[in-house]
Image 1 (spheres, rainbow, N blue to C red):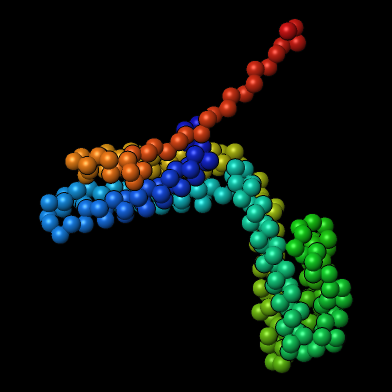
Image 2 (image 1 turned 180 degrees about the vertical axis):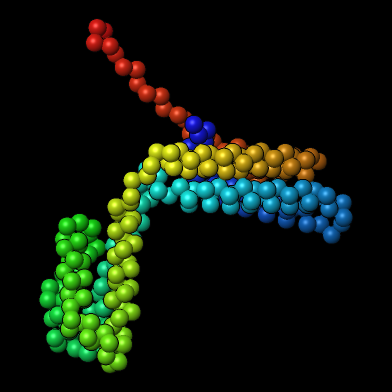
Length: 244
């Protein structure tokens, strides 16, 4: 079972970003021309390297785990962004035809008999039906013939871009089911990376304390004595038996 949850790992990554910014400020307070603080600056540099490495590993683990159910909210936001990208790509085909050929010629009629672009920005049946119709029309013999015409060399890459953005959107809103063993392995990978990052943050507090032993108020002033807060784990409500 994982020890650090996905949400806690994300919190640690955010906390690590703040820590790195604070370490940079702390180092500036030791930037005296004298060599007296040379070792202390070295301790802060070690702390920065450890936190940076731990953060990069945790970010990579979280990215690998993007298929997990815990990322459903992020996928929804991504789907909204991809819907807009898809609409932009389809409208780009229309705009290019208008600019290069005509706004009411046979190519517009072949690809866009119904120009209801607003539906593309709202994922659902209407958007899906629009795409199926557009895809069918873009594969017609007439459109394929024009794609091979040098006068229409602008068209194939735009059609391909629309197809690619639709594929990304479809994958984002309809992810493949994740096998339980793989899901658990991804969570364990995130948990292990987060624990390493948490260790680096603990070591950082000790290194900062040592670097500013003569002026302990500096660490507190910069927030480098703060600890990442752990989320409260909610327990399942107790179920009453039928006799109670």
